[in-house]
Length: 190
Image (cartoon, rainbow, N blue to C red; front, side, top):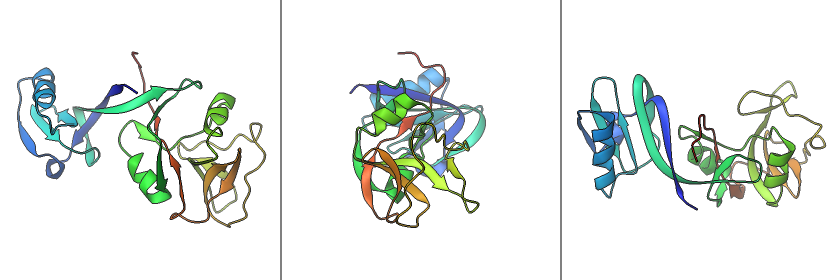
């Protein structure tokens, strides 16, 4: 699985998450600093010329004109979407892992995505049940029931996994399941 360089506009690394925050002549100069520093896995360059280097993902904020860039191992799967490495995590840990800019817990919009994800017998998805009974994806769209039967709700929970090919509520946020983050990319250049 090759590393993918992810660039997110209008986002910068928070000052307290940076181990090196200093002026840079350009985005290219900032990227070069990160490239030669073995600790650096993410960097940002903002409109005032500040270059922030970080040894961890996350802890970012919106900043008009800024550019945030990091490398992650994403692989394009048969559904056309990009996913990072699968790990076995609790729901809380999976949410934290997939909350970085450009990532999310998988959202199922197509039959191809559903087929790819259900090949894993127990995988977290970004589906929740609202108080009014509507099943909604983390991107705000409603669950399309033409792809699957209605979610099984034997645990009376509001978070879901795909369990042996069907949407099923998870026993709790402490339940462990496969976690893979879906890349939410625009203008992908392979």
